[in-house]
Image (cartoon, rainbow, N blue to C red; front, side, top):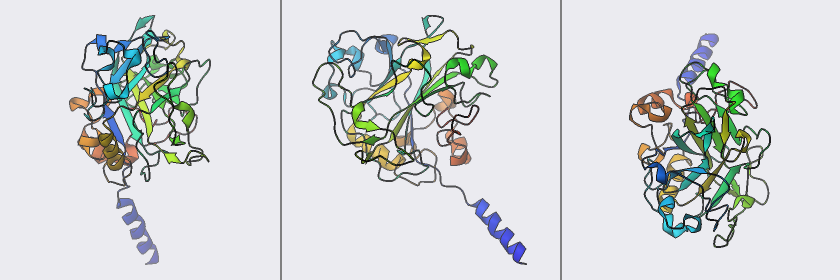
Amino acid sequence: MRKISLLIIVLAGLLVPAPAGGHGKLHCKRISSEAFFRGQVDPIAMRGEPQSMHSHDFFGNQLLLRLPQPELATYDQLVGGPTDCQNKTDSALYWVPTLMAGGRPLDPFSFIAYYRDFDRDLTGTGVEAYPPDMRLVAGDPQGTGPQPLSVVNWSCGFTSSRPGPYRSPVEAACHRASGKAFLTSHISFPTCWDGQLNDHATMGDTTDTEHVVYPVRKACPAGFPHKLPELRMTLKWDYQGDGRDVTLASGSPYTMHGDFWNTWVQTGLEQMVDQCINTSSGHPHGSQTVCGFPFPGGGGGGRSSAAATAAGAATDPALVEPAPGASGATDPALV
């Protein structure tokens, strides 16, 4: 009798749905012409320089490259501008170096900005919105070797047999992948902030990267008490080669990096953080209006909202952590 009762308790526990993790999953789908999508300018790391060191592909805010002097763009000029992101209060700017295959620029067909708990937990508490005008860079533009997989990694996409994470496009080897394979890159930003911002009116490097660090053992280190969302950029290219001909405008794939300029409508950002991250809500992406949802027909590799809801947190690729250094493990943000 005792064994039967114990079995009933165990089975009952299995029937209780696991809490789904709150996070934002915001598709930013290019809707403007290429003239406003790619440019050789970097308004936060090389402010005032008419031409940056390499070409970038831009997502989100659509105003920057329409300005007469984009290298001198200001927060006030951009905040609340038109955006190609699903959440229309997300007027932030996101950009990465242009990727090339065989020496020719290759357009990404999907960009997703994931916003998660600062330590990647399934639920969040006490996470603060990025302060207005914060300017961050993740990854190493001068990298000469593999970057930490927790910062930059590559794969052939969650819908392929090679979901990664891998250290380079060559290691990803998408020519060997079955399923729906697309070269994919993931860039994760630091989440612990010391409460200071640099002077953004100066010329040159105006980024605030020196004021943020990555958490250590799921905690922010001393001197960095503010917990920010983890922004993870996920990009996909329609490429199924062996990776040997893949380069970036900044150099080898080891130089992959991402830039983020917080020109969100601040009230919209705060709402997203509160509803999508600081939550234990039982739906995988929080409120669809605020937190994002797949494009109709699964554009960019996303599942339908019904399928995502049915699958829950246990199979949501934006919520599952890879085993450290493991190839073929499920990556946190592969769709």
